[in-house]
Length: 627
Image (cartoon, rainbow, N blue to C red):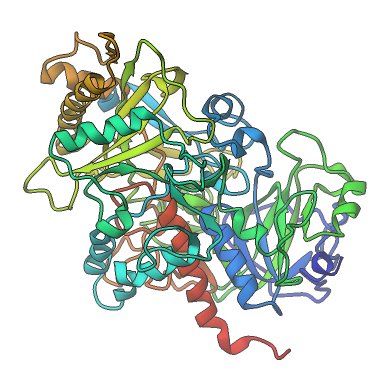
């Protein structure tokens, strides 16, 4: 039980009054109780805290799991607490890689999903767009289709270029060590890691199945693209993001390998038992589930000194009883609501840093609720501004894709170890494009309903995708109540260039799809395109189809971007510290990106967690206590 009991200690003495955000009710927990057992009955005296930690990481998602694990390994003498608003990822619909139907039915829209929606838009035929966000251990790495791709090296070099002097470490050369450290991959050692927590391999590699797990549809996808002049690319990390190939997939033998792997390798995974790999650290990392931070607290010097945290029930709705709490004190994990009372609030003192890893929606959302953001807007909502940073929630970008769907007479049944999204193509349609590629196409071995991207059954789907959007959105609060969802104004397709790219992408993909159907034809029997279908032929009709059926790839980012001192919308400095005269507060997740990368974002988010941990370790090396 030492790991759990030493994760934080009582703080009986009074501290300076904490401020920040809207006025909140007193914490419903006794002062000075242990981390594992706040009583939930006695309100603390003014300025006191319920428990104390050194580092608080908010959000056990892709970046948060990586960062918390590395911090605990670097500082075994310190107390790091990782808090997650959701529950465990240990359900078959998440862990079984091929079970997209189960995930769509039982995970999307469930208690493990924040279930956000971007606002309806005229540019999208009046539609609002569903944004699933992982409210679960692993975050969106527990939701996605396990496509583990990096951006093109030029994407990260562009980060360094637009950020300028002082940001050189954000180039591809600076990011590469973190991509490598995150993964165990069978590819070339010059670009791939060999000992990281994330088990990654191409889907046709024996890691997934002795014979590989890629479908013949995916092989036809590659062959057809090569026939159209696209180069074959067996390793995008090695050769750059141009060409077509089988996806790298973070799974093993048909089971998802998400960011929770970072907790497993140090014995801190929030399950019924500790991982069998549990050698170090002992007591450095504690994980709380169903525990939601609602406000960051600051002292008079604008230092983040702690948080208010609401303790909730499990995702199933069952309260966590006192008996379960006592049983779990023997492990490193506590998932609880004191005495079964969901909604109790405690105040945690953070001695060194609060690190937000809650994602591109919830990190800026929490900053805004805490008084960090555009001061005038916050004041109108009754939130006392702590730092006037207009970039919080601004600069929001996301990838859009459009489904082009096909049926085959014999059907398409994915391999039992498939991730469904099996192949990727990167192409440059526009000669004058700034980026190395301006279109990404995924090949999925399911037939999707275009409206809402719901799986319908056997078939395959190609998705021309806008990977370098010019349109930019924002998110904002509607009130000071943390239970009110933010307004997400994605502003999709507001730039005509974005629409034109997708229209051209659909035209290219239809040519590719026809070539695939020819290769897949058997005994004179040939498949056909169902969506958009033959009735959609002219550019105007394709444009209408795009507006009616384009959907999010679920890659929001840039909503609390880092930037130079002269950038009025920069929220973070080069070390991911929040600007505005604040101290002891960082953001490390997709929201920090200065520009969206031209590929799936999960591998980059995990690498950001790795790099963020290094930055924090460097900044705190001198204050580590002697053993």
